[in-house]
Length: 354
Image 1 (cartoon, rainbow, N blue to C red):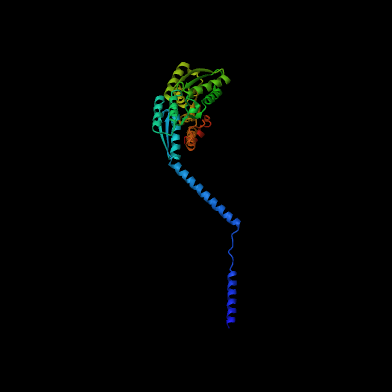
Image 2 (tube, rainbow, N blue to C red):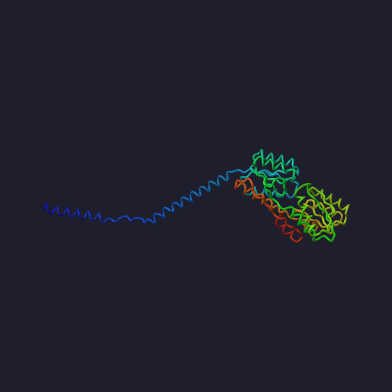
């Protein structure tokens, strides 16, 4: 009996051991699957880290305040005021973290220097200006250099070293050449021209006159410049000067080349008063709304459009580039003048003044 029990116990033990040994083995993941999973996890971590860094940079950028001082040559100067106003609009619409102050210098370099010095003492990061005087504003550049503050000058050049500031504007020599090229198309043989200059000694004025004289010398040596005198960019002075010239030269004048629209419109009013519209052709510069309306009605022939939107946008883009790169300099930015005449004036009015 004991033997039988022992046998049964042994058999039971063997079956039990067999059952344990028949338990399924755990499936092992292939080495490739593990490597892929690790790679995916690493990529996810890297993307998360990149996203966090981007958010941190964006937050830092949003928190960074930029202080900018803008001094226009004069708020009575129609064209540069248009540029300054559009620049102010661009900053307000696109840069909520920029603090920009806008002032006018009344065409006085001493006032403008005082404004620049005030911007410096206020801790401005960047200073923008439209020079009120080519030579008189050199101390403004020097003050910015001494303070280590980048300076951007739009439209009106300054007679300071080019590397000391960024210039945004057009080539005034080319503008003068365009004016003379147009004049050549309406001047009779041995025709006579008068030139209304801007501020005495100003680069805009001098360079435009240079361009005018170059073209006449090259293409129309028969043309005579009867008179060339400043009307200081002002409409009233342009009208008074034209009245003097009409008194002195009368119908000998064939073309008036006024170096901005304010003076051109003053000349037109004087010509109207003498009932000589159509007998004397008038060209202006800037392409202001008033000038385009005069072109549309037929009293002004042409204006060389100094695209105020482009000047303001280029100035704004330079500021953005310098702020983002934290650079203290930038290459100069030039743009072309565009002739507005009776054939395309409505297109320009619709695009820029509607």
